[in-house]
Amino acid sequence: MFCFRTILGGIGLVPDKPPDGINAPSSGTGINVSDIVLWTVACVLLFHALGDRGLWTSEGRWAEVTRQMLATGDFFHPAINKAPYFDKPLLSYWLIAIVSAVTGRLDEWVIRLPSAISGLLALWGTIFLGKRLWSEQVGRTAGWILLTTFGMLFWARTGTADMENLAAITLAVVWYCSRKGGPTFFTFFVFYIICFTGAQTKGLVAVAVPVLAVLADLLRQRSFLSLFKPPHLMALAINLAIYLTPFIYAAMTREGYQANGLALVFQENILRYFQPFDHVEPFYVYLYHLPALFLPWAPLLIIALFKFFTAPKNLDRRTRWLMDFVVLVFVFFTVSGSRRSYYILPMLPFCAILTSVFLNSDGNERWKRLGLGLQSGSFILIAVLLIFVPLVRPLIEKGMALAVPDCFGYGMAILGVLALIPTFLYRLRLDLIGGIGGAAPKTTAIILTSAILMGVFFWQQLNMDVYRTERPFAMGLKSMVTGISSGRIAFYHEVSPNILFYLDLEGPVQVVNNPESLKKFLAEGSHTKILVSDQRHTSDVACLLSTVEDVDQPELREKTYPWERKTSKKFVAWKIERQSES
Image 1 (cartoon, rainbow, N blue to C red):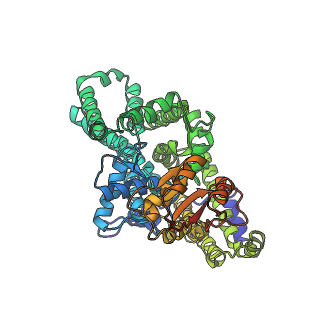
Image 2: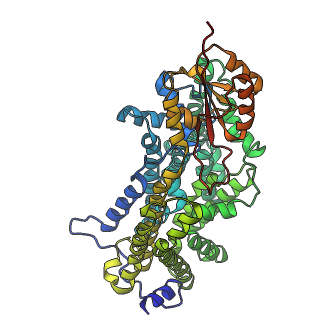
Image 3: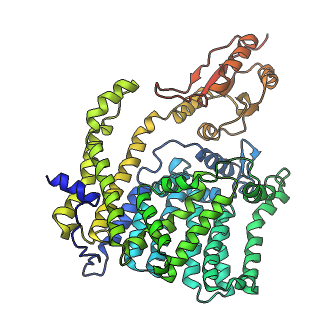
């Protein structure tokens, strides 16, 4: 009976208890318990087992570029397999290199640490902005929401430049909102330092988005012309020159980087926006990409946006500015011809603040009950499903022909029970739940449940890494190439940065693009050679090898599982041994 009532209350069909105990209790020393809980959970979610997973897709580019920088001592000419690679600016590689220099290692943990630290910075900026413009409760609730979104946690635990970019954007907006009462040269100078620092990690979107925050504010104040005043223009010009300096230096100091530095700045930031050459998706994709990245809080965000859009006259000046800013950023990314799900990541901190403002504003009780009811009900349903995972485990093992790890069974059930505890405490002992999250008791219960469920998701992601096959293949290939120089190793059609990173070779490998160049590679010398290809080209390479070297079967194959449908990008490797002619 209690569970039935709990579920009904979760979806808003049973009235909630009065929202007393909203403010978090503080200890006699002045330390806020809710802040301690928030930052402890943040450190666990962002840093726990950060380096346990193998490299994931694009992480290999950051790993291999940094490895070559450290190996050569050249930090201004990024390269993969000795070929110039300036698709992304330099700073994100430098951050990894700094961590590597301090720790004396270069592995998955080092590659991802700058992203995780950037996640903490973005979280701090979100909390600070919410507290400064609204209240401590708004800031803290926004921090919890951002921390427990899928997009935030996924990209903060991924070794790319996306989280550094998001952190810079958040901090630039924080700086402007803290100093906009005095728009001096110094204010704009620091503002653009932060923006262009972010641009040095991923691109000029780190400048565009904060500028949209300024634009939204000035349009509301009808003081748009202040952007054309000398202090602002001088600050922009100086920082633009600083931003371009590394690209100019790279172009001047090595041949081949003229087309791989400044040219790519234009191609990746300007040309891609107006005349996309890849990543072309329908104009409406962000209507589902944004909610997907904002999971599990998407229902509350949608309700908040609907309520604010339908009653704009009831919003205070700060909330109107935030709404204008969110809309401008969404339109900015939508208008671009090149669209990818993670491009919209910079919206997450501000969507978290917007959702928090909705939850903590006066009035709108019916809408808040609806939103919190949907969140609570969906979380309870997920937790109950987790409890029943052990029952379906035998079916999974039989259907997929694999041995599911023990933690995927009873471990999931235990975590499902843990996820229900905040809701039980809210229903039975309101005094225990109130204040822990620095929000209203029901909001706190939902926040803690979300943190547990997201922890479950990323914990299971770590456990399921045993079924990822690229790193084991790379380590097997590393043993296979022992004693063979890098010049006698070739990749057919394209080289894999992930594989190169794990091989840790001193020099570049060869890349053979067609049958003729493959024949030439095989004919060079009489030494043992290694040929690596993905499975798309296995039959073509095998046929050629059988006629030229009497070798057809690969010596090493990347493992595949019965449930995998797309295996064409998995790797195989041939060991070609030739005896010298006497």
